[in-house]
Image (cartoon, rainbow, N blue to C red; front, top):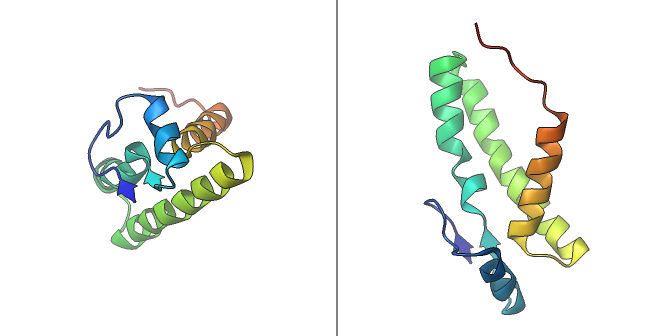
Amino acid sequence: MIAGGANNQLETPADADALRGRGIAYAPDFVINAGGVLHGGGLEEQHWTHEVLESKLAGIGDVIFEIFQRAEREGISTDAAARRIALARMGKATPVSMP
């Protein structure tokens, strides 16, 4: 298992394919690192309670599970699955206007 705890664990998307081919599980760094964004953006900018933050952080595990399921189902790397999920979510996002 490779769990990307820092940015850019893999040099290229082909590296994710190679890991998959060798049976090595890879949890993409940009998913795992979401905790820092949730903490800073949630507590400091959105003024979430610690309970709200904890529930959002728990959701990271659910997303990792979703990524692994999709990768298996579609026969793609977990990196590709994570990117597809991210793009789909971004497509559904509502733009925020800044003051």
